Length: 413
Image (cartoon, rainbow, N blue to C red; front, side):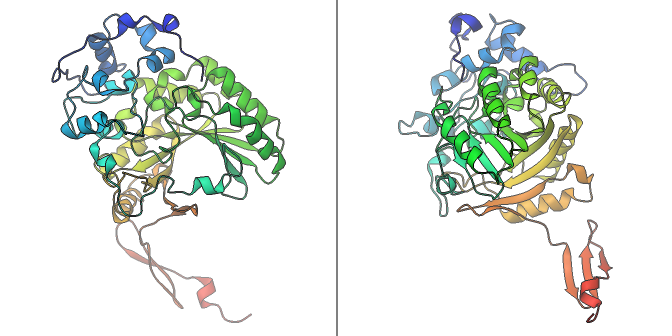
């Protein structure tokens, strides 16, 4: 990752004065009737009074001022007992990091704020439940060379960096991420060599960490090297940057990204509160140059596990040309029990989406199977019966309809 210079961004005088625990400010909720993002603006003016809007909207500034410790968090909010215990642990393996921008989206007076739960550690993460594992998807077992995961016949995962601007507490790769400057570039040459040798690979997914935290130059190099491998037909990037640090989606970055076509970007979307004026601008900037956008959402208990929340999220995504693609059952990583819902809850949400909104707003609900078996789609029970009369199907209203299945009724040829 490009090194961030304090002189380039601002001075440390921009660091907000240390507040006593309990001092917090409630900002207005985002409203489609208000232009811009009043929460973000008021947060900046209150906590960073010496920072102007140009600095705030510089992604380097956002990276440089990430909140990464309990002491820094106390400047903005009184942590709950569960949060304090987690952040005081000396043996904590998975780091804590959140950008000022993303923190501004959180109602800091509400310990149950959905976004707060996803980024601020809780002591529940230290509890290991049955079936949990550091590498639940068995990625390490399907990694032929460092930086490459080759699980499916024609697709490969390219882990370009171990760095994220914000660390989601339920991250599947929490065992790998956390370096503050690591790009894993020392592995790139072997990864490119592997991709070039395996001509069956036509689709490469760039992930990490978050690839869009790399500099424009590093991303340009990465995409350029992939473009030279003729049998690679498409590239996908997995990122949460447009929602946690939308300032990163600059015209210069977009110019680099559009050099590789077809390019697809899957954005990690968690909750409707992430759809702000800044994130909308970021998504539209990407879509305007022909980049195809999809979303990947993890089903999380107490965060987005309701039909109403998911419907609002997927509707808002479509307004910025992001197609809801995957709804993931939360992977059983170590310390994730407090995040995981039942499969029945996921089916209930899918049942409440299909038929009640446009099909374009309905993602695939999948379980990424433990042990490296790949993604398996999960559907509510729409097939009532299947016999010699045909296929009996249940629609979204609960009504049953018979389809005359030719295979079931036709005799010998």
